[in-house]
Amino acid sequence: MQSEGNPDPGDVFAVLADDYARRILVAADRQPMTAKALSEACDSSLATVYRRVSTLQEYGLLEERTAVDPDGAHRSEFVTTLEGLSLELTDGDLSLTLDTRDELADNFTALWDDLRGDE
Image (tube, rainbow, N blue to C red; front, side):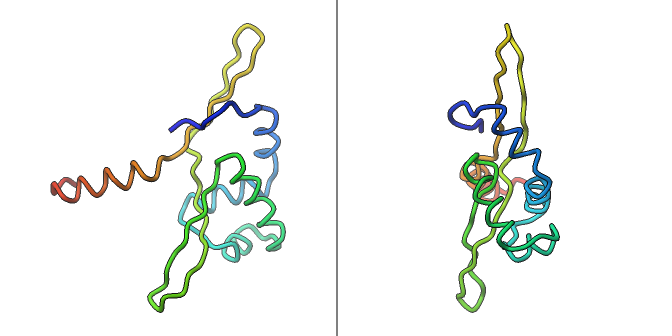
């Protein structure tokens, strides 16, 4: 899925230039992680993680999910949605395309494959 709208390339590059933001994207791409787990994985404070998470969500690069533990407790986890980034320079104009995971479509495809017995 490509992101909606046309984000300003400079803004996106500024977000991705931040070391903590990149660490969060990489960590949350491996598996969904809580803010506390991201803080530990990225060697940063919770406040730093929450600020970066907010910015990454604003640009559609990170998604928050609610996980339910076996005891019924709920917790927020974050997962990277960014799959690719492409920049095009045409006639002096920069255009940026963010490719993100379409989780709903992915889940439906997996469900359909399971029902059909596909691997």
